[in-house]
Amino acid sequence: MGKSQPRSENRNVRDVMIKDVVSIDPSASLTDAARKMDDANVGMLPVVEDG
Image (cartoon, rainbow, N blue to C red):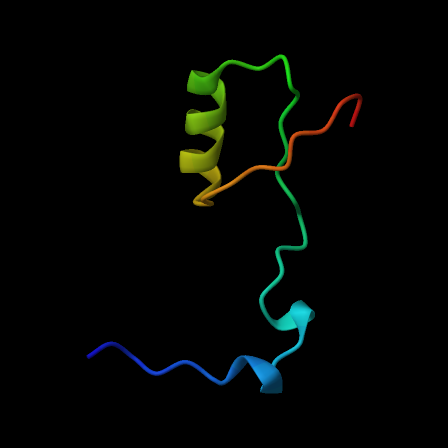
């Protein structure tokens, strides 16, 4: 089995959040989004207009 994780009710958002959020513009290509996610080692990106 994998390493056990602390129970979620004992954790705060700040314990798991990313402080420097990586986002992407809605006009970006899927290739750019995939590259950005890979570079940042994240599984999703907020899509932000003029952000």
